[in-house]
Length: 183
Image (cartoon, rainbow, N blue to C red; front, side, top):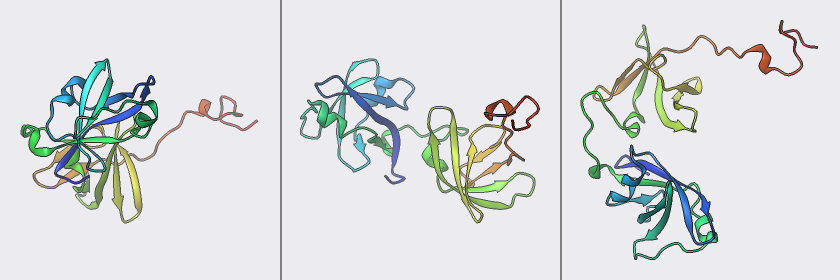
């Protein structure tokens, strides 16, 4: 999708045999997703949602036809749902949409040296991370205040504090004793 649309949810696995699906909404209240005009999938096809339980919805196409079989619902799994940016309120001074981060310059804290650009924002359930495309390849960085202390959308950049290393506890390695020696 393009910068004119904001990712607001993802269609999950089917629920039952009559076309219902799990919907993972990125709105504060999941049911609010059905209230946005112009909801489209990542192929640009318009959809409307009707909720049938906690996180369970039926999808209706532009003509009002509902998805009514498990097989049709299965075809929608992992389909991203977007709304036009014009349907959303403008963020406050210190707020932003994740979509606003994509394309921003990434500056290293202390040096202000540009090390790349934000290529994508990911959230796989364990926290949000930023994919940074730089001269040395791609870097995945946790989107936390410690790693990203400054976000300045208006100025077109973020400031990052790159971690020196990622330390993995020795007990995570099978076949090692408590001193880290292989057995």
